Amino acid sequence: MSDFVHTISFDDLVEITKLIRNVYGFDFVGYSQASLKRRVTRIMQLNNLSLFEIRSRLTNDSAFFDQFLTEVTVNVTEMFRDPGFFKVLRNEVFPYLASFQRIKVWNAGCSSGEELYSFAILLEEQGLYSRSFLYGTDINTRVLSKAKKGIYELSRMKQYSENFIATGSAHSLSDFYTAKYEAATISNKLKKNILFSVHNLVSDGVFNEFQMISCRNVLIYFDVELQERVIQLFYDSLCMLGFLCLGSKETLRSNEMAKRFRVVSKTENIYQKIA
Image (cartoon, rainbow, N blue to C red; front, side, top):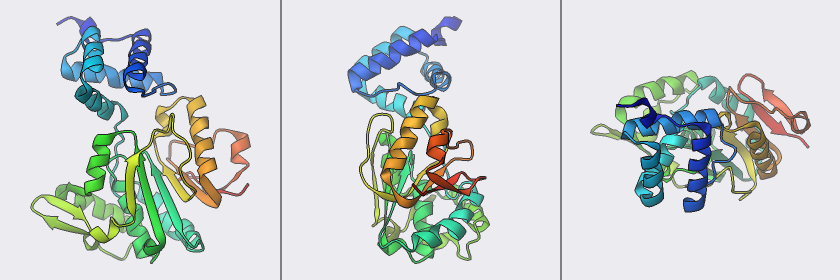
């Protein structure tokens, strides 16, 4: 098999993203080109597609586009991933959130929902869940469908439980899900104040005012200009003294924007809006 079959140039990538924008209205402008090129090349390899074939499939097969979007935008996640982050939330952020009458949390780029359910569990532990509402958004309808169900492989719960204990919890994670066969289903009481929906950070705007926004390890796939636009969106979506949680690989690059926040945790990149 010839090498050219599974190889594309950056010019080819621009043509593919234009095609997607024209056919589906989905805009990849601002995504890191190197990251996008790697992921598109991988899709071509997995499906044994040439450049002509992937263009044709994207044009004529909406189900393939859904699969394509899943592969390109996949965000690896797990419950209580990076326990140190959740420990800071438990000890420094949530006690402050308790001062708000209503607590609205936005998990942007929520993928299949594990992080948002982790927030729900911590809020329940702190006695704050009943006056909280949590929004999980993603551009990917496939992962959102899984998130809404709240059903995960039971085999992964051992790791999730270890993560949970490492956050400093005195509870067992099994208090918050039911196990049946090989599946763990998140408790219904944790689902009642949660809404999962489609939102595109590239093109969509402010849709509510939040006390906390979390978008961890998503911005690394965007170029600097788009990162700054998204940070502005988060700033505009936060109430005064609300919290912004970025991933360990991300930070507030703009000095002007950094002046509007207090650093809560430099290690975990958690900030509080002060201006």
